Amino acid sequence: MPRLFGTDGVRGLAGRDISATLAMSLAAAAARELTAEHNVQSGPEGPHLRAVVGVDSRVSGDMLAGACAAGLASAGFDVLLTGIIPTPGLAYLTRTGDYDLGVMISASHNPFPDNGIKFFAGTGHKLPDQVEDLIEARLAEAWEPATGADIGQTRTDPLCDQVYVDSLVASAPVKLDGLKVALDCANGASYRTAPQAFSRLGAEVVPLACQPNGVNINDGVGSTHPEMLQRAVTENGADLGFGFDGDADRCLAVDALGHLVDGDQIMGILATSLKAQGQLAGDTLVLTVMSNLGLLKAMAAAGINTVATAVGDRYVLEEMLRGGYVLGGEQSGHVIMTQHSTTGDGVLTAVQLACQVKRSGQSLAQLASVIKAFPQVLINVPRVDKSKVDSDPEVLAAVERCQAQLGDSGRVVLRPSGTEPLVRVMVEASTDEQAQAAAQQLATTVAQRLGF
Image (cartoon, rainbow, N blue to C red):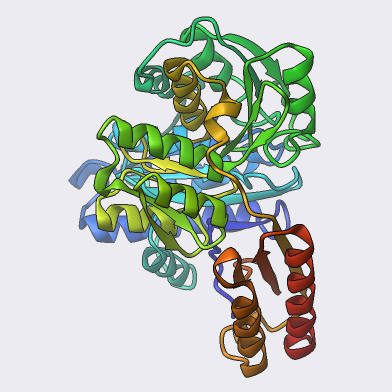
């Protein structure tokens, strides 16, 4: 049986894959696991443990949040329901509000029919794989729900996201007076917090996709659809723009000319800024195997070390905590700054990047120009046995031949998807033609050898 938890919680079609019944059972299982971990007695014999539950703007969010609250309360947890809040805001509240568990109901950049559930420890960090496995194992066990005074209480506070906005404003080293900033909030969780933070910092805000209605989240907008943001920046004469995904744990940027600035370029700008200030721990940036070779070369030229991890912001964070590093992230725009946050935070990233534009006196285009991306081609090969991608001899030989041909001017990465039966083939090369040819050749080999 496949593992219930993927690389970013449990995710699927709301109402079918992610049902209210599953949400209630998962939340109760998580509560029981944490109760056992804390070795506490709830109810009259001791204080209740506490959980905070947030949602993005999907129509299914309230259903699943209510189910999670019921599951948590039935296991003796007191529950705060925040309403719509970005994932990093939920993580921040979990940590600073002294909660024992955070639960975020979101499917991030997925279309609105999907939803998901992810858990945060009281530290504000996502639960490690081994704890998720323990929670999943508890789904099959018999247990006695709480009764009487042992049942947890549930309350709501739709304004508790203001604590998170306060933290964003406090993180800024400079004010943003004089900057005109377009913000595409994807009709998602940041529709209120992002414009508030930038306005309080003095920026002139051009709000986009800030009218969620339950079904328009990520619908042609946000970080996965930056075209509207690119047009809006140039049409409104903005200095720069930011596009967030549905739960605002990542962002992409747009310069004044409407050019996209991706997560690799954002990390490069922030890394060089922190190094110049003596704040880049170990002079090291943590990234994933999918980051562009151009970023690696730019960082080497700037005297900055890079450490690569598997794809997934949780693996980036694990390496950052292990090595004591302060900056890491993914090309997709998940950027983690442990000086301020315990998880990827799109609005925080946007604030810090805008501050660097303001402080440096340079445009975003000028700052991003030092990271010259290599042509990169990504091909998803579906309907394959992804478990064999690292062991099939012909696939391994094809990768070795391709890498030898590219030499130092290119790179090959084959990666099994964490959620789908497909393999991602990524090739970087000096030219688009080289990258396309090599990627197509490898994709064909993967399909022939691993297809079913």
